[in-house]
Every structure is written in structure tokens, then in C-alpha cells.
Amino acid sequence: MTAETMSIFSPKLAARFDALVEKYPLRRSALVPMLLYAQDEIGYLSDAVIAEVAQRIGITELDVRNVATYYSMLRFKPAGKYNVQVCTNISCMLRGAYDVFEKFQDELGISHKGVTSDGVFSLEEVECIGACCWAPAIQVNYDFHDDLTPESVPQILAEYRTKAEGQKNA
Amino acid sequence: MPRLVSHPDEVRLVSKRFGQGAADIDKYIELGGYEAIKKCLAQGPDWVIEQMKASSLRGRGGAGFPTGMKWSFVPKQSAKPKYVLINGDESEPGTCKDHLIFLHDPHSVIEGTIIAGLAIGSKMGFIYLRGEYRYLLDIMEKAVADAYAKGFLGKNIFGTDTEFQIITQSGAGAYEVGEESALMESLEGKRGVPRIKPPFPAVVGLYGGPTVINNAETIATVPHVIDMGGAAFAAIGSPRNGGTRLFGLSGHVERPGVYELPMGYNLKKMIYEVGGGIRNGRTLKAVVPGGSSTPVLLPEEIENLGMDFDQVGKAGSMLGSGGVVVIDDQTCMVEFALRTISFYQHESCGWCIPCREGTDWLKKSLTRFHAGFGTAKDIDNIRYLAENMMGRTFCPLGDAAAMPTLGFVKKFRKEFEDHLDGKPCPFAKHGAPELTIV
Image (cartoon, rainbow over the protein chains, first blue to last red):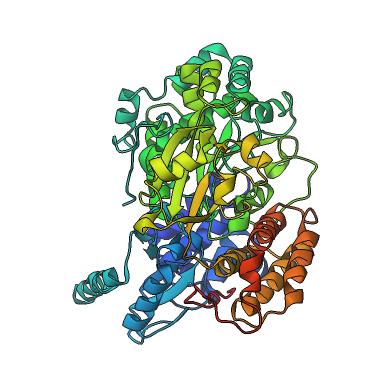
């Protein structure tokens, strides 16, 4: 059986990984981005993801876990479809990030690292995301939203809720 | 979308193409791009290094090491391949300049990387972006693909017999990976922990080969140095601090944003004229001049302070990453110190014990202190802890956590004392951040 037929990833991602490991002077250099891209598709680093990544790179699963546990964006259980990451570091804090974070908690009924019961949203307080001059800022998955106030929170959530609905009905 | 700002005092080199659509390769060429590399190919590596040395361009990541000198340290002959590694793991709180470079001028990063490769005799460069910058990585990847399509990258760049390849790389969330040796570890598919130095990367770096590691802003500046000539570039800045810098004004300032100003620009003027002063008519309490790891400065200390590596160093702080965080009189400095140390506690990679334990105990002490349960002895304990982290770790993260803490305790001791004996914090509304390590 070839790796391709065994793959838990979509054909597109599997093909991307095939190319990725060949790109570097050392296969292992593909590990960190590969874990992130795998998580983007599967939602988290499941045992099956760890196993396939280990096999593709040619290292042990333990070795993969050893690396994966280091990086703060990588997770081992599912997050919401839209992961809301609120930066509260100094530049954001000075411009009201904690009020924004509180508003998200109230609106979603969850706290740090929580997931809503419908699985649409999760919430995280995160460290600096590199948007200090446009603070306070958040990321929803990879999308940035900046210059926020607590008042802008419901609209942002509504936007993603509509998106989630649209995908469910599609 | 990050808001772009402008001010008449700006000298626009690195930011001159911002907002002009230069992520498109043809637009970049139309605006004068990819001319510097052609000049370098014609003149050769020695000329390039000469120009870089004459420019007195110093590393924009924070350490301020002269770029030309760094390049000249790479041995000419090497049994192992040499590499260029661009550090776009921008994570220092207060810093978002590289964000704009990747967004608006990705080809300047590519062009600078090729020039660095030519200067040191390398055939391969890596551009590493922090994992959170996915939309910027997409922009960089398209730019690299476009450069290949035009023959600017590949086996025979610009029709010469010179080869240069670029690989873009994503991180996955780790401040520590912005440290150059940890960056190499991460790129080799490992945990991002630092390596002991020496050997320095210029001798033994990525995959064991000689490696030049430059910050994204530094490398985006390189084509401008070549375009205008090293001496002309040096003339823009202050002595031994060539050129301009992307300063990120954030916090309690009226007009926050990334402004490109000559090195040595007065900090007070930067806050009050460029940034429009303290917002809501408040007064200035303190400034963090170069990202969260740089010791805080008081209003009286910035009167005549020119923002270059030497002057800020002389004032007892550091120019660092150029992220200027402005703090008004309504801010609790104990809370600010706590939020700062919480970051370093979260980001310490745990490799060196003084940093791992020191940041954790500092966070615990400051948390208790801010909650009003501190004792008079704690203030000296915090100092003692911080002082004992300094210089005792592989990489500068330990110092980066200790230095600002020492600054807060030293310069705002009175405010710490005001929190003693169960007194409620006069300013703060919030407790310790909830961050937990996965």
C-alpha cells in the first residue's frame, strides 16, 4: 500500500507534503510547517496525524510529539471552527484588550481555551500577534481584526456565525 | 488591514513602496526594484560588503550588530554549503514593522536576500515567518514564485551563471524562535531551543554550514543601501547608525503607527509631534523604547534622547526592535510589569534553568504583589531574582525578562510600595493574564 492511499489528508495536502519534504536539504525541516498545515485541515494534531507525519518524514512519533509540544499554535484537541485569539500583551492591554477579551467571554459564554457547545467558536488569550500599532487586535484563525472596541465584538462574531451557517447549508 | 500613517519628518526608504501595490512583481520593478541586485552582480561580492560596511547599517532585529561586518565574518571557502536565513519571526511585544514589509514590499525582502547570498557566496536562502503571519506567508510565497518565473531566482539568476534558491518557511508559535540559534533549530525541524555560542552561525550555522541571519527589516533595507550607495545611506542617520528605521509607535499615543524616521530622531519629538502626543489629553508616565524587553524610560530621560543604538544604550536602555510603547499617567506600572513578565514566563523555552525558574518566580511574585499581598521584602527579592538571571543563559531571553523587570522596580519603586499591606491597586482593573502553557 502506498502512502497516498493510506493518507488521512486530502489528496491536495498529501501532494503538497510530498513536495515539501523534498524541498529542503534535510527532510526534517518540513516538520514544523507540516504539523501546522495538517492541523489547519484536520483541526488538531490527532494520533493519526502524528503517525502519518512521522512516517512521511521518517522519524519516530515520539520525536514528532517532542517537537509539536513546543509550539504554542499546535494543539492536541479540537478547537472551534473559528478560533478567536485575543492579544492582551502590553500594546493591546494599554488600549483596552482586556475589555475586548471580557466582551468575547460574555458573548460566547466561554473563557480562555473554551469551545462553544455548537463547536463554532473557541476563545484564547494569546501573546503578541504583531499588530501593536493597530491595537487592540485579534486573530480569528489567521484573519486579523484590529482597532477593536468591546462594541465591535458582536459584529465580528455575527460575521463568522453567518459564514459557518453558509457552509453548513452549502 | 493595518492602517498606514505618514508624517512630514519621515524619510521613506524601506516604506517608500508601502501602499503602492508593490507586492506585484511588475509594480515592484516599475518602482525601481531589482536594480540593486543587478548592480551587485556586475560589481561582485567584495564591492557589496564594502558598501554595506560604509552604510553603517546595523541589525534591525534588536542587537544592532553591523550588517556589513556580520557578512564579512563568513569564511570565503567552506566545505559545507553556506546559507542566508531571514528572521521574520517578529514576536517582540510592541513590534509590527516586518508585518508591513511582508504585506506591502515582499520583493524587497527577496532582493535583499539574493544580495546577501551573493555577498557571502551562498546558493540558498530561507525566509522564516512566524506561524501567525499566514496571510503574509501567502504573499511572500507568491512573490517568490513570481521571482522564479522571471528568472530572478533559480540556477541562472538574471541570466548569469550565479545560482540562488529561496525557500519560505512557517513557524508555529514561539517567541524564542526569533533568537537566531533557536531559529536554526526550528528550521531543522526541532524544538526551538538555543545553541551555545561559540561557534557563531557565521562559522557553524544551519545544517552545520556557515550562515548569515538577518532580520527582515535589515534585509529589506539592503537594496536601498545599494541603490543610493553606502556612504549616502550612512549620511541619513547618526554617527555609526546609518539610515532610517521603522519605528512602531503604540500604546497611549494619539496617532499610533509605523513611521520611518532617520536613526537618531528625538524620542520626545517622535511621541509628541509624529505620534500626536498622549491620547485623551493625558500626561506621559513612561516609555518602553524598543520592544518589551528594553528597560523603561521616564519622561525626563527622553528630553534629548536620539533614537539610535548608542544613545539609547547610554541612557540605560536599548533601541531593540524599535517598538516604542507609550504609557500614560493612568497606568499601573506593577500591572504593566506583571503583563511583561507573564509574556516571558510563557515564552521561556525552559532550556536554561535561570530563565525557566526565574521568569516563573518573577511572575508569581508580581502576581502576588499586584493582588496586594506583597511584602516589603518582595521588592528586593524581585531584584535579586532578576539580577541572578542576567548573563546566565544560552540566549538573551533571560536577560530580556530580567532587564525590564529591574527597570520597573528601580524606577517605580514608590508605586510598588503603594501596593503593600493589602492596599488595592489604584489603577488596575484586571488580574494576572490567564495564559497557560499547552
